[in-house]
Image (tube, rainbow, N blue to C red; front, side, top):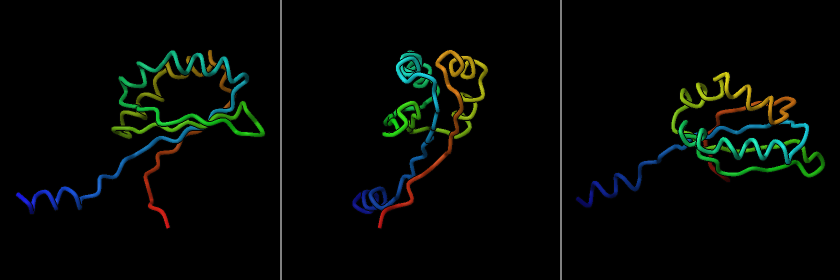
Length: 105
């Protein structure tokens, strides 16, 4: 049993994240719509970690989701409903990247 515990402790679980940036017309409007989609995010196994705003450009928004599956996340963001939500929330442009922890120094 002790060997199994050591094996579990030594195995690294690599988490995958989706890092997103949206430039929006109005942060308050965007945030209201974004928040209203929390259940849809959870249904797609997207767990919101944090939202940031650029200091010198507060309508430039960055947010990070922990994701269960890249395929499921891509399906969510490719859904026409996601495009409608972006449009109704005032997204001007945006991008997303799938990232994983690369360690520190």
